[in-house]
Image (cartoon, rainbow, N blue to C red; front, side, top):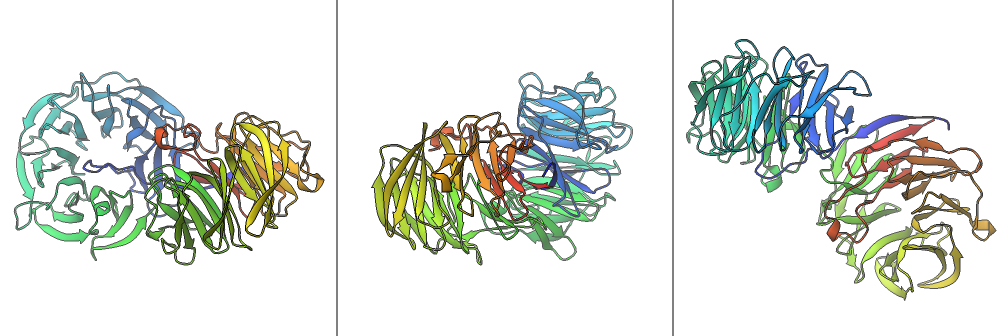
Length: 617
């Protein structure tokens, strides 16, 4: 095993905010889907969404991105108001330009049709819009006319150049160019104007607002020439969040907080059809995109819906995670993940399809998960334990709780034993029932049950010691205390029971020989930073350790003096400060999970919510 290659990326979902629109973008050929998700800019294939790549070089959180009309570059902006123009044709995504666009978060970006100028809109103290040359950053005009944050910006597809901005001050501003200068303010809306888009022909542009209206304007003069409305005189029953034209510019779709997506005829202004997306808050529609033959919308849940406008039906839904992934288990070609907000999902590695766990799911951060036979056991920050059959993925039918704060746990499938390490105590469950408690003089930080089910190994938080216990029926008896070179963060028995491996707070990788009374195996492996997760391959041949330096180290247990394989930057981001005060485990080094499946491929999850599958050869 001397090299590795990236097999696939299971992409994150858009991170949405209730009441705020979300912009989806596509490339000039209508083949790619572009959006921002947490610290990543995500580019997915529209026909095959499992094919994707991410861009993670922003220092702030990316908030907007747009393809150049040439298709060779993407401009993305972040919460710091910084913009980056980067190449789309190479895997390295070489940066062409970086600079400050605004003094605050960028909400929308567009290019001039000749791919020479970039226009950005969002928040800022002195200016909420900016236009500049794409390669030098030189200003090419002034876009003014708003007193509050600008939610969207659009550029005419042909000369004479026009730019339109819409804002939370209820105004629509028209600008002429080049150089760009303010032309007129349009005060037709009575609430926040959420989105504006030009027709592909340039004949008109449409604006949508939280006042439930969608208005049509002349592309050159800005005069109102129509309105999309039904028999009630409005476009939707709720605020209209986004719109998108078809390629011919004869129809458009709108997405609304009333949980519907509507198709409109431009010439008549009549509603052609309505697609009902659901009846819960999560079904509110915050964004939409019409790219060639594909019509998409974004739900408040983050799900991306593929819509068949002919049959008014949803043909496919892209699912995944919006928040950081906290735990992961691998079984039979499927990856079971759980995230910060309590969402549990099942990824099919080959197809890329995702299904959610249903039922009485967790409502808070899931601390740890384990698979025991055909059951997934999970525990959350409220110490609620759920045992879920993998055949149905329906949660809540078998549940229990622990009075102490859980940090880690492990299970033994054959005996139905579950052991939870809590604050200075160990708790044993048998067949779903609590049967034993044992207080400890230390704070447990990780535990592992041997494959035979008779030995329990427990690490101590901040103390370089390993405690071994005998599991005797329904009790735990301490038998040995071992001094280590560094405190452990996670410990695992190898599947054949010959080794005990551990990730540590230092650079050391611990591998203990069980058959030699847990004597350390001499090896030449190390990490460059603290490691926080570890895993053995099913045949016990390889031991992988993942660290906060974003790297994974894969070691050959049969050849301890052979250099380990280092997978560099398996994830671009690891550190997080999200809700640090509510965590029982340090969140500045959040849960990072590394598992080895039957192909000896490391799986690594981090705070950027992207599960990356790496194939090793």
